[in-house]
Length: 305
View (cartoon, helix red, strand yellow):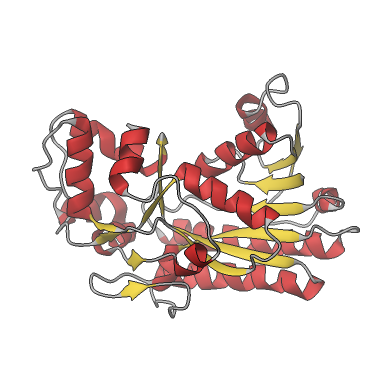
């Protein structure tokens, strides 16, 4: 395959490009920072990866580069969990996804020949948060900030179908791997100070990075996959169970809870995602016959740690 990837230097995108290269596929990395991308994908190790500069929220010559590629994987967007949610950060989170997806869809519409598929990231934040409800791909959206971001994001992606291009939207859960969210959780546990965040009763819908990357590859290759799919493992857990399992795998105690007010001071509005969470099941994903390498939290954490 010939595949265009945005967000390629990120936690998920970098592993995706590695796997595409290993499969013998050609990759065009669209990036705001070519120097960083050259370091992540040095030409000697990644001979089938081409790197091109682009402005994610602006039209430009970069849009013509998509012509002739088989598929586009659009992962780019301002990080959700790295900054306190000031009004300025919230605007960046929204606009980077809204305009970024719009410009990718414009590029696909103009391309000749067109890519056959757009695989567009979204997030389980679409469903809002709840300690009691269970969500799948048919569930209604929530009404908080992240739910609104996801709805706007997905609405822009849906426009690609006007060009006759197959669309797969993957709603990512919390991605576990060597880095990402887990990297922030491991140090306290290794110092014997790990424990539940807030009440510990909130749901944690997760997926191993290898499984998520394999799901993206399946979405690219499988012409029968179209629509919405949850990029989550089939066994979500409550945060208490997450911390207990992590403690068990690390052979460390899990007893010191992180109080809600401390998270709110650190994350502001973003603390709501961690403190409330959601129980998300990948029913449509499993209906495709997709096989998870790491369906349970313990198997995932053992492999990672």
